[in-house]
Image (cartoon, rainbow, N blue to C red):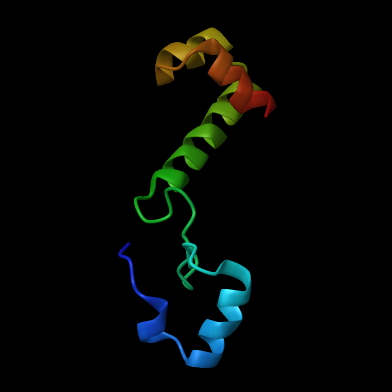
Length: 85
C-alpha cells in the first residue's frame, strides 16, 4: 500500500467533497476486489472439512474420542469441538 496525493488523481469536485469530511486527514480506500475465504486457494479449508467429517463418521461408528485424538494427533478437547460443533 502506498501513499498517493488525492489532488493528483481525483477530479476536483470529488476532492472538494472529500475535504468536507476529511480536510487534511488520511483516508484508507479498500480494494474493490473481494477477499477470498481462508484456505480457499491452498486447499486447507477442504482438507480440514473432510478430516472433520471423517472424525464425526468414525465417532458415530463407535471409535472413542481418545482413539481419535491419538490417530489425528489432536487434543481430546479439539475432537469434542469437532464432534459436537
